[in-house]
Length: 290
Image (cartoon, rainbow, N blue to C red; front, side, top):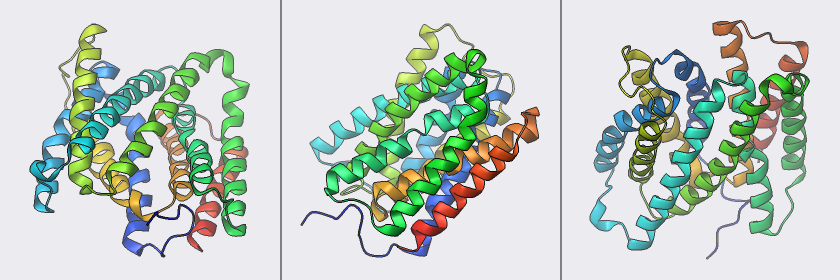
């Protein structure tokens, strides 16, 4: 029986908390990438390489076994890992070429694309509450983007790289949704992360970056907040929600990254930024009513 995309059984509170907590943890990733003194691609490699063994360990504790994974699922994991690796390469480079809020916002164009994907797959338009949530969320995102568009000559390349990251991240999430239909969440993320780590290591070497950091705390925090905890919680939540809800939750990240950029680097927040963030929060409250 095919699962409905927009109307499923009410997910547990734990799954919703995991969805929000995962996005909150991921949102502070750009801050740690900026603090790391290895190259941006190498920083992404350490993010994955340090977290992957722990992902497999937790997956094993929850019943994940390589012997139980089907061959088609292995192929999905490989392709997902390739797209995830490219996503991190583009995003980590883009983080240094634009504002943190911009990088996270453009990288999360996956929000809109997942909503469109959900409508196409379900062949059904969202409900009244879902439609209101989508409207509030994307008006909020547009307000957050306002500052970026004003400064586009300076941030254009970083915004473009982050947009490319968003496109590849969308493909990654769709593939992970497919994997999560029959694979334990931590093990599924571990497989995709292992492939992505290989992509990032090759990319860092090819780019001639400094591979070994001299200060380890940023990459350690990045590995265990953004990757292990953040992506772990998000991957766990994927089968419990429609693409629409997942997409709206992703918009938490630019709102929180804007705050992190303001606190750490003095990136100015305007009334439009605060209003946009508030609208995104309201959208999440509305979609939770479903």
